[in-house]
Image 1: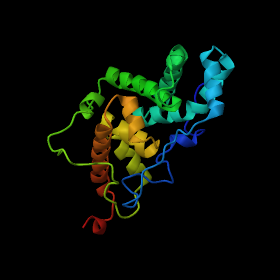
Image 2: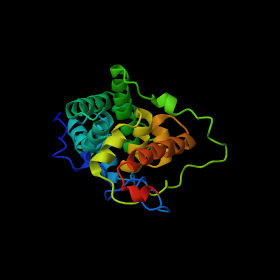
Image 3: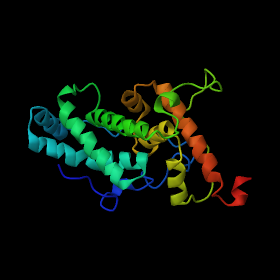
Image 4: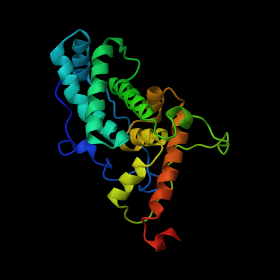
Length: 229
C-alpha cells in the first residue's frame, strides 16, 4: 500500500478548509455545512468489489479517502511522521474489517470512525494530559436543559492569523479538537459525528460549542486591541 501524501502534496492538510474560515470567524447567522456524503454509485460499486476481496478495488478506496484520513490524523496529532503511520494503521484496520461494513451509515462516516479510534488509541498510549473523548462527552453543570448549541458562535472581528488559528486548534483538548475538526473543518453534520463517536447529537453540539468558545478566547489575544472592546 503506498504511503499517504505529505502536507506539501495534499491540499487537505492545511488549516482551515472551507473557503479559509471556521465557525470562530464566519458571520453570525450563516448555516452549517451541508452533508458531504451524497450517494455515490461508483464508490458503492468499488466498495462492493473490495468487500469481495478485489485488491484493485481496495486500492481505489485508498486513493479516494487517503487524503482526508491523513488530514484528520495530522490535525489530531500535529506530527507528519506520526500522522502517516496512523493513516497506514487506519487503512490496515479497514482491510481487516471492510467485510463488517453493512451500510448502516455512509462509508465515509464509518471509515472516519475507524480512523478516529486509531488516533484516540495513540493519544491514550502517549498519556497526554488532555480531556479524553469520554470525558468530553459528559454534560457539565452549567448546561441548562433547554439550551441549544447548533447556532454559529459569536463573530470575531478582524483578520485572524492562520498560524494563531492552527495553534489554538492544536491546543484544544482532544475531545473538543476532534469534534471541531469533524464539523467545522471536515464538514460532517452532527448526526454523522454522533454516529462516529457513539454519542448523542446534543452532546456533539455541546462539545462543538465549548470548542468554539475556547478558540474564541484563545484568538482574542491575537486581535487588535480596539476590536476586543
